[in-house]
Length: 247
Image 1: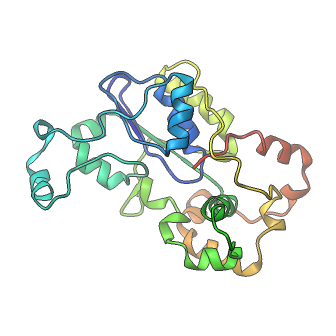
Image 2: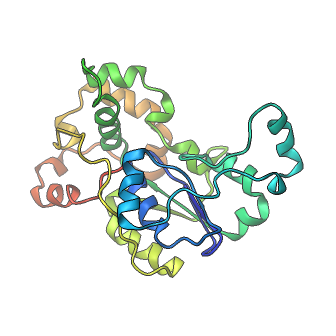
């Protein structure tokens, strides 16, 4: 995630939504006092090669503590900003004044394709690869849904939700809103997915039901629908393959 005091925005980083690519792109515009959380070593190498700012200011200094933080400190839980921090935890760390003043945004992705991306990312190092049904049945719920990252008490609390499916258009709107100029998103974490077919050609009925159960809230909120028509749309599929692939 990134909290930019320079540009007054908060980026809540979701999983398997091109969040790492956007995180790296945004870090190019950050100042020395902005908060940038750590990525994987591989992604940090990419960020370094691009010459962008790396992780900084994500550990809290004692001078930044508020009274409610000292209890956690004495229990050995120092306040820290990290990837995929929820909206509720971010609000608790930054306080209401910054939370209310800054522009808050995130990215969400169609849940079926997002789950497949999670499967390939979560199993690429395994010697024996489980089936999707096995993986989805045993996966932690927050590995399949991002709902808690940008909601509080089941209500979205961000000012903008970029849709992965409309990434190019929504990114342009974000650039105009923040006045940052071009946000260049490098391709990250895209090499592990070996099957790029449309989800309707990949997911079994059992896997589909599991995803719909876990992701019911975002499916209802965004109106996501299971569709097989996209699988036959070669133009659409070629455009989807151009989208930066990231966590």
